[in-house]
Amino acid sequence: MARKPRVEFEGALYHVIARGNYRRDIFRDEADRLTYLDRLEHYRERYQCVVYAYVLMSNHVHLLIETGTAGLSKIMQGVQFSYTQRYNRRHGAAGHLFQGRYKAILCDRDAYLLELVRYIHLNPARMKRAEDPWRYRWSSHRAYVGKTTPVRVQTTFVLKQFGSSASVARKGYLDFVKQGMGQGHLDRFYATVEQRFLGDERFIDEVENRKKEREPAKIKVGFPRLVEGVASVYGIEAVRLLSTERKRGWAEPRSLLVYAAREWCGIKTSVLAEYLHRDPSMISRLHAAYAEKRDKRSESELQRWLGIKSITHACPLGVCLVSVSRGMGMARRPRILAPESCIT
Image 1 (spheres, one colour):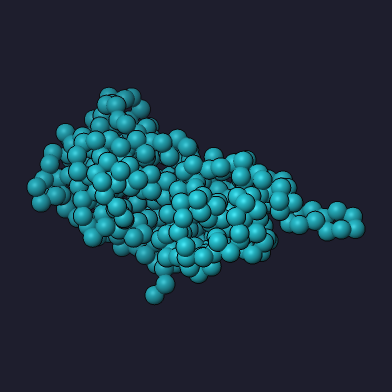
Image 2 (tube, one colour):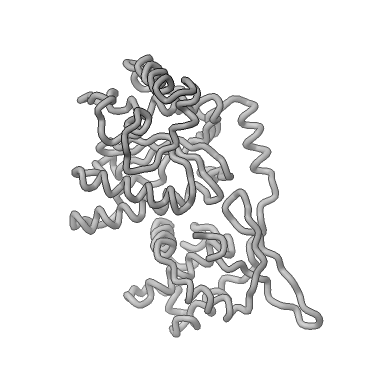
């Protein structure tokens, strides 16, 4: 059965589980864990998302994230790609570090936020070699008891459920967490609807209504035209971008092509993989590599080559609206937004 697309909208709450490839360890030492948390904080700040909880285990990670205008896919792609780069560089490794697609469960905040925070923080106690969750360094539990953590964790909303003063709220939180000790793995947090949603019928209806909201239009520039434009910007033959040949100098234009095709034109990864004769995972890596270090000058040159301008508007799905205008007499090409104005 084909995977259904992930539902993304502003304010969505996700329980994210990212595992190591073949369930292998993704952290070898303290430095690796600090690097992962540094990447998480970098993209939390960059995309203005909210982190309610996290825990780093040896071969997997649990995150509880509320998205802003940027979708979860952008956040996680940035975190996992940049961490993998640093991990492989540091340990002389190569290839995939994480297992395929991370699991992301869209959760009903009202019903599950508090319990998920507790469940995530008690993860160390559920290991075969259990560790004390109160002293475990690599979880956001420390933030809830007033200690500093490498990631800015939003604790206020949860703590307010237990009291108005800091001392009373923290005591109530600790009592709540202690009540969950010994529960073990809880299947109900994974008993999802369509393998994506955790909530009752009311919540599912709300999600369906959000899905039906009108999505912003993508620009209509044919892929061949986009290929010609990128080739012109970089001064190479268009056929080279679509060939299976590999040269260091072609990685950058191919990355821009993938980025523009996905972000500006809305072309799916699977379709781009066919166009470029590459595995979909390679397309995702090219996109993530370019998104990490965008060449805005080349983007501007590409837009000028295409003769495209835009009027942008904010959108709750993290994609900008595009308006298309036509002059008198000669029709202009569809207008494309300047991505730097909407994607930071």
